[in-house]
Image (tube, rainbow, N blue to C red):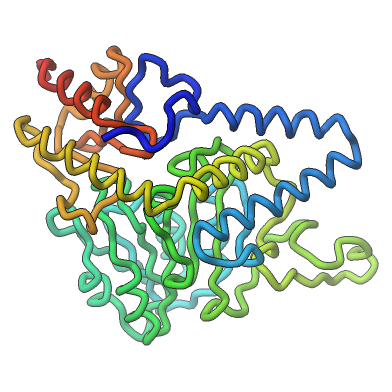
Length: 373
């Protein structure tokens, strides 16, 4: 099982084995070139601004293509945590309304909703069963007062992949919006914005870009009248003269959530990496990741680390997680061997992406067998 792309396209992979993409990916060499292009354009003054705007449009178009959506419904903000907080405060939830979350969700998808408890919002928490949250588990908590279901497509904690399309078909019959975190999915498995109401994603993991952006996707079919509770000059149609008129009008599309200039260095890098992912093909990447993940699962069966991630291909993506109380220690020991995994929270996680190959898996398993932890 060879890598899908040449490892020489990535910087810093020489003599390293990188299973750390669930935290962050290795930098693409082209990303360095993209950031350099941004800096060069800064030297052009007004013309540089025009080039920035064009690259931002390119980036949104490519991200929209990755989620089978429209660029008008994509906003680029600082990070995923900011986006979830902005949306949670823009929905105008009322006392007695409820929000459904779960115990294998990343904290950024939990904290903004818990903060709403002081306003009388009920928070319904679903505990996992054997490290998974099922569609049925979620629907059992949804009633006429449910306004939002917040869940990840792929869990950062366990690697389990939720059938969000089947979930959404049911939620469309209710008043509940689906807010889908695709941070651990977009770039490695297929994501379709037409089967959720809102989505959020970080730039620096499976999308192979750098830190500095959070992606907000809005499906306008059910999300109507969503008014931001924060405003900036980029959010409005009439940025000049607002002092005199003491009024403003938000843009009709997703850009109403963009308050000021974004991280253009990240936009250049993300535009470049999204282009690479599209040219490579998400279906091809997913097929490779699932096959290599199956090989890892089989090789790990000899070791005393229970598998947390579902073995069935359709129920997992790039993250393969194993129960281990000493996960952090194992990650530190492997780092000394230039093997990067994530360890902590009672487990360790190996994240497989398009640049990983069979040799990487063999090296990881071989080193795990030698550890005395």
